Length: 333
Image (cartoon, rainbow, N blue to C red):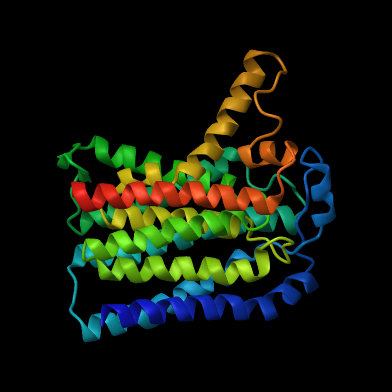
């Protein structure tokens, strides 16, 4: 029965997302919601000027529909879950949607208000920490503890420091996922593999509602790739990338295994670390660059890699990280 709801969620999420492209892409074109390409980026990206953005709405709708259909069926036909598990599931989805809303505000300002930088960094950080805090408070009110599972160690209580570290990790991961969105198909491809492994891990831990949410996210990423694979007909925008970051965090924290974000999100962390290193090195050396361009996927572009090659290699790296995470759970939890 668990397999049936998982498969149904995958079919619905993929189908709704892929089919929405037939309507939403022309609609975004009609609204002139086109992407503005930064002049300091790779020059060959200029041909993408005007490609519709905010396409993340497609997979957001696909995931929400899949969960709205399959989770009630799962509860009705299998068994009910504790309040804490329900809050981690629906609160996690709410967190992802709230991050998506922050991204939508950013995209709207860029596209409609014609301010290319969108929200300021401070505005985004304040809103993101507010979203993370709201999710963590809801978990705490539902009986969540200040402890986390560490493979081969067990459950470790970090006291009040857990909530601070959790908020920092959530906001960091969400922004790292955002940085991964820069070339056709990259973010959706990488996140597909992250969610597939989270689905398997959730199944191993008998957290089947989380497994349903994970497979819905993975399938929706595949549905989006129908339109976003090189050459992309639509971009997800910050609307989509911040939502996906929230979804990945919701799944990892929902399983009480946020430490798995380290191997699972290896590409995400490579991306954000490359930006931090580039900016720091640029300031320390008064204008020298550590990479040809950051985030790191642009460095490989400047080295002559095609967008498809970058997607393939980064996806394989993610798959290796996912395999490591699965082994840690299988033998260490």
